[in-house]
Amino acid sequence: MPVFVDGVRSFFVASRGHHADIGGVTPGSMPPFSKDISEEGILFDGIRMVGGGVFDESAVRAVLDSGTYPARNPEQNIADLKAQAASCAKGAVELERICALHGRNVVEAYMRHVQDNAEEEVRRVIGRLTDGAFEMPMDGGMKISVAVRVDRAARSARIDFTGTSPQQNNNFNAPGSVTKAAVLYVFRSLVESDIPMNAGCLKPLEIVVPKRSLLNPQPPGAVAAGNVETSQAVVDALFGALGVLAASQGTMNNLTFGNERYQYYETICGGAGAGRDFDGTSAVHTHMTNSRLTDPEILEARYPVIVEQFGIRRGSGGKGAHRGGDGAVRRIRFREAMTAAILSTRRETAPFGLDGGGDGAKGVTTVIRANGAREILRGQDETSVEAGDAIEIETPGGGGFGTAG
Image (tube, rainbow, N blue to C red; front, side):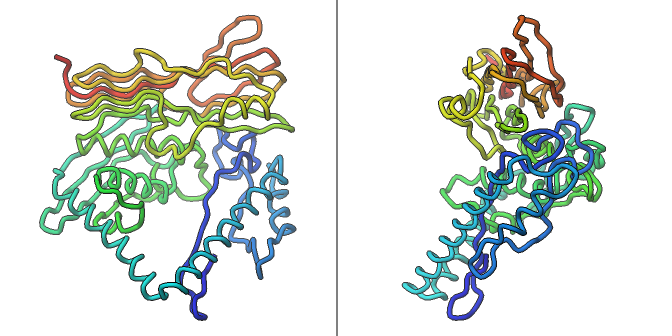
């Protein structure tokens, strides 16, 4: 949303949100087996959502109801989008207010300062880094290859993903914007100063990503797992190339379940990788998850499920001079029939240790039927569950760092 000050378009405000369901072939819009982006839900192609201060509900609803796999609960989507639009409107009002207090030029100067300061902080970090490269296998035979080349004179770095797997006929393709966000995250996390995340962090970085690769796909390639799984792999590979952090769980353990009435999506925490002088943390959301779990009381009140277990998966972190964090165990029992799906990795490949540290444990997803029968699901899988069935997710641990004494 543009913000005008003294008749001049001076700023933009934006709001990003995750929606529980936007259609697609499975409830929750995170299908394990999509090959075309249309299978992952409806597509908004630059429609005007708000005009003249009025939310265009009919236009939005028309998109939500379109396509082969329309949204299952458009009323919820519209309510969420209205909330996002309201947050932008509030942001615009506050920007106008601060410009009235201090003047547009002062506000713009401080915005430039925030980015310039972030750029300088990243350049300082680069000055302490050395060249490195890493090749990391992923489940399904894919791989991330990355080389970091440091120019000390310019205090800049080139991050080159040449050698990474080509675009896949599955949904692990990560859009270029997601790849860039993962690089931004890594270099921002290396900055010790308390600075806000902003584009200034990227100014010292040259990012090379081959076209039609796993990290820079072309439409209409599916991308559901690229955003949530491959992004995690990029971060782990980059930290591995820099030699500063063992792999974290490397997956978001994306669990979706629902039917025509209910749709739910969550990511599940796991083990964080250890560093040169610290242990990894247990049962936390790591790196690119950018999400938190719903409180069990809220989940059980709003959905026909029971959270039977949620705790630390003891001993799943990698050994080493500094141990990797342990993963988690989460078991949810269903009170009515639904479709459940898991979209995850690190079920075939383990979170790597560094400098002699041990690998973290792989993840496991199990369906426990009401009669006690147990079925192990693949990393990307879906199943029908009946009342009394449960699904149990044992998330991966983080890798260890250094050889244990």
